[in-house]
Amino acid sequence: MMMNRGDLSFRSWARLKPLLPPQKPKTGKPNNDHRTVVNGILWIVRTGAPWPDLPERYGKWQSVATRFYRWQKAGVWNQILEQLQAMPAAGYAYADQQDNLDWQVHYVDGTVVRAHQHAAGGKKGVKKRKN
Image 1 (cartoon, rainbow, N blue to C red):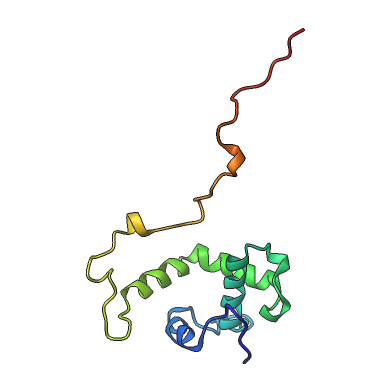
Image 2: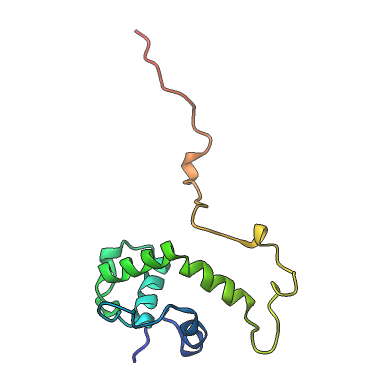
């Protein structure tokens, strides 16, 4: 398998793979490879591009987007985050296990967006014309 820049390393994939839902569903056709789909999702997150711009090497953009939203609705991403936070790394416990992290302070999500530099300090209200 050829890895592209930004794709999951073999080590990262080895940690993530057991946390994902089963590759083969109980009914229906088999899913596309989880690793390829996750790499596609990471490409979208990293670049900020719209789904239709996803490179073909990650599969059909509709399939990747559907899997992302399905897993989001099922809480898979939250479960993965919780399990990764609880895993020891190379014999050392994560700071979270030692209660050294305050997730209220360290948590960052996509709702934090900086305003353009020209958005601050403008005059308020609608300009009225004098007759």
